[in-house]
Amino acid sequence: MGCRGRAAKRDLLRLRLEVASGRVAVDPPGGSGGRGAYVHRDHACVEAALRRGALAVARGLRLGGRLPREEVDRLRTRIEEVLAQA
Image 1: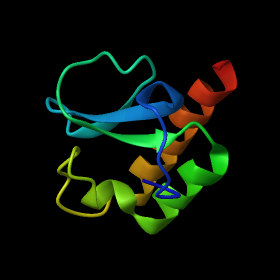
Image 2: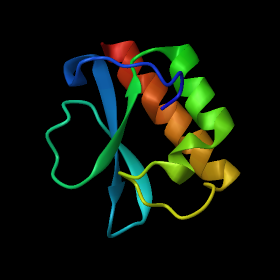
Image 3: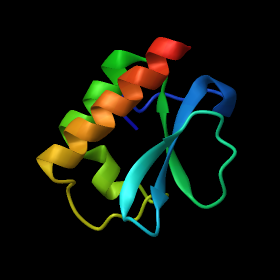
Image 4: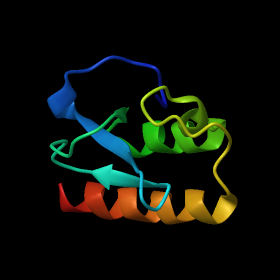
């Protein structure tokens, strides 16, 4: 999504839409149900995806529009936490 490169699912970080809240959530193990989108477990790839607004057009998330700035910031923080734990 960010760098548009390919990798095995196990090497990617899954993002999914929480239907109840309408927020994008990080799914580190990738085991939650529903559709999702994937990004490399790499800071540069994550930043590229967020900067380009790639989440808004990801078919697996079906957001239908750009994320508000505060939502992008919240998601960036959560992704950084997950990447730091890996």
